Length: 424
Image (cartoon, rainbow, N blue to C red; front, side, top):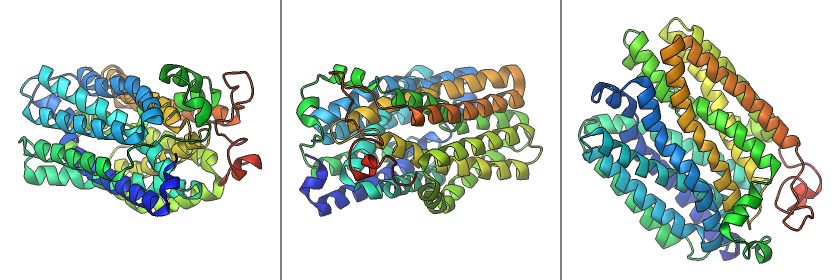
């Protein structure tokens, strides 16, 4: 049954737990993972392309696992999947703190990244389950805000504790273990959506995932999301390499850019949410992509730290527009019975976290900073086109050939029956 059937108070408790827990996890990961690229470059002597490949390997494998995790959570409940994912994420972070070789570092990073990739779509599905539809944009924005605030605070905590010591990694692992225990104790043991559950529950997980991927809207959103994640998902990896090798005081400038990104997220999230409500998630998505494009072109031709900071502001405003808009768009083509499958399948776009650092590192080595930034600008433009195509596509046919009642503007709820979603 949907979590709303357990009562409004339970749903509110779970939403608050997910928001607060996601913030604590972000602090934990920020205090440990922020300077991984610099460590690999300075301590292990890896090339930009090798760094991009190693750091991107975890998200790539996670992209393969998360769709099945999302589908599994539709069948057995979100709690079990989230609990196990957080436990392994914590173990992986502890492993990173203990790693003394590239091989050990790579294994620990892959474990942590795959677990994090599994956690993300299932937690978003659980948040949609627990929140009333009219509040989902707001709770997605809050979650995004606390995550970025956590990433802003985390690096400073890591430096204060000792960034080169294993202690931050041990603390980060303990935070994940505590969040896992809270999920296990608070979230109801059985939660499988009921909208369409009579038929959906009878469909095996793999077949259900295949059926989900028949939705052309989701396929276009996947393509657009992949390009977007290549642009912003691991921007610190490629930008840090460019700054530290091409500019004097590059590390200091990079730190300022990280702080700028976090500060803009904090101050711009509420206005961005109001703008999304006013113009709709699709228009906000296109606007965000254009701001990404402008930011990347600006990085390519910036000649001072002040210019870089200014274009980072532009870049980050694009980020606060596209992230909640993308989640809302995916949520609206799903329902209670297949939300985990949809968010899980959408997580395939995490391959952008692999191709972004890899292609960015290759472009940086072959064409310099301008070539790398212009590549990302092209990705931003292509993403806007793909999302527009997905938004204009019709819903899919069901397994028996009839129109699928699997969410989207023409199916579940009054907001869909009128032919246009809220905020659009």
